[in-house]
Image 1 (cartoon, rainbow, N blue to C red):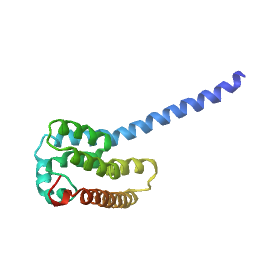
Image 2 (image 1 turned 180 degrees about the vertical axis):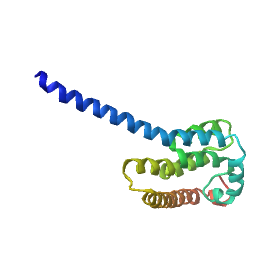
Image 3 (image 1 turned 120 degrees about the horizontal axis):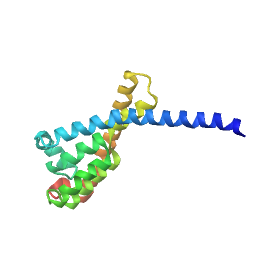
Image 4 (image 1 turned 60 degrees about the horizontal axis):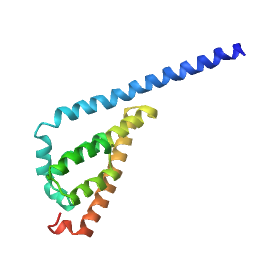
Length: 163
């Protein structure tokens, strides 16, 4: 009985060490992304992007203030995007229809960069494979998100002046 404890303890410690190292690798991806976001958020970068994307956002039933939660959700995930949507909605900078449009878009296409890097962490075989996967994932999810959100905007008449 005591002889069986040694291998079990060895396997348990090995699994714990492997899990800890994996968590450190995850943190190496997520922490820099969060730091970059925190550095860019106060700058006028997102406002400029919003003005530049204004007409395209309008076709999706959104206004320029929706840029910050969209970009945040695309890069970091839906939870971070929602964390930005809530204060902007409470400040009444975007209306309920726009919040629904942003939510629909992010449900379809969120964390494109972060997810791809995390998937690469678990099983890619080089930079080329990561690049191809990222391009495919981003392209397909983005196309689907635009199609679904634009269809909703058309149905609700947001493309003809109401948002």
